[in-house]
Image 1: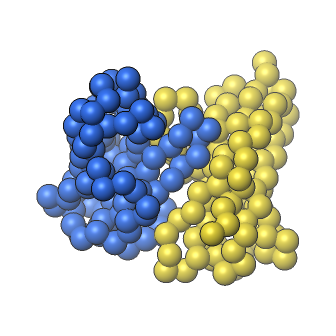
Image 2 (image 1 turned 120 degrees about the vertical axis):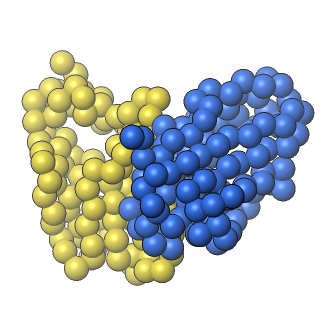
Length: 113
Length: 111
């Protein structure tokens, strides 16, 4: 009965590879997010989708492409992985458009070797 | 733009003592604030929130204080327990905009 679930929890891959992280929420929320958390624990918003429409796209390389097949899912595909992409990626969701209480998944720790 | 709480300081407290975690925010137009707790290996979890028309709100063992005059937010944890050890984030929202997270404070509880 996990509210926001993301897979995989750990992802270890080589530089240059392409990988995807999946996220699903069963809260009936309209808005979903992707955050990147660096080694200093700073949380940086990457993308936000409301009802499958992109509403926030912060300064993120084009190698990162979110896809929302329906409002309960927001996946993150990353092309040509670089060492600097190593981080923990969190999916979150909220009711309403933005600025409401956000519910976070457990995170995906990505290690690029 | 400016961020909420730029650093990751560490607060070390003795088990049973009260903890106070502080957060300075920069946007005087912010109308909603949240405290999150992030335990090791987990995602941030909601603790308590407060709207700008209030200056204090209490939960179970936690109290959030909002001082809009000096743009300061604090989280007080009563009778701190080992399970309270985590990184704590404050977040602010300007009406109609997204949440902006601070840099976090690590709370360490000594037995």
